[in-house]
Length: 275
Image (cartoon, rainbow, N blue to C red; front, side, top):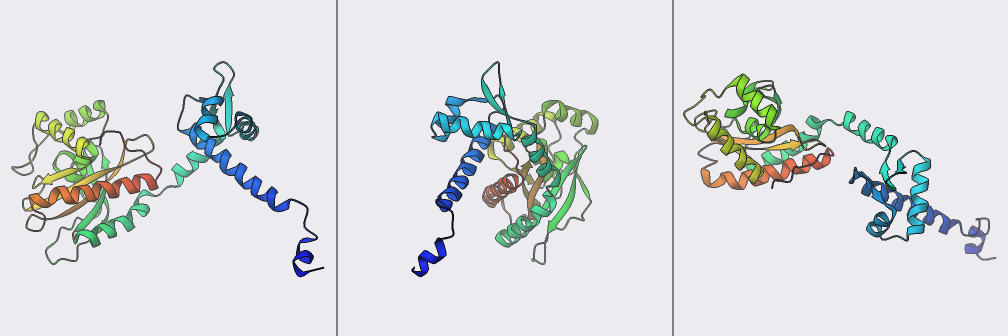
């Protein structure tokens, strides 16, 4: 008997094929689960089969296997398949375990490397933005924010990036409770001018702070979104006007926007369809 035959003689017939078949079934099943997760209202068997490019019989067999494990369920009245509680629990455990500050740190450092400027991460706490993490610029003249410090939402890049995606009733509550006090002569201090600015942020995907929080300082910021599309945190790049003139704001804004989108995707978030 040859060496090859001796190595395979004791192996059950078709074992390699079975292993490959199991892997293929797993991939197909996960593909179906992912498609159902994207349709909370459910999908019919024929729709799933067509989207997954599978035979209806194969699709039905995979759906039954997922149902037997509690991952999906079938609505007997509508005849559609939906994700079930077990899938929700698994997704929830990921959301509870995610660390958006830790996830963002490498991106902050990358932004500083790319721009030469200070990058910050902040969240909203009521009517203020609170800074949680920072990557300092190597420049002698640079913007430094003490971690834990606060800035008005309406008068900072991070704050406006967060405000732009708030539900209308929440935005209105912030405006009533906090008002729009001027921090510099450039601060947006009327509801009309602020709302126009927020609409522009939603269109561009990033906010610009043109000496609205500190004279001589420019900033661009973009929102990181959670799985519901609501604001989770915001990313910013700030520096002196001499190095970030008006002509550079759009370039840096697009870079910060794309970086925030990367972090959103890494955290399982969803970007609202406004840009």
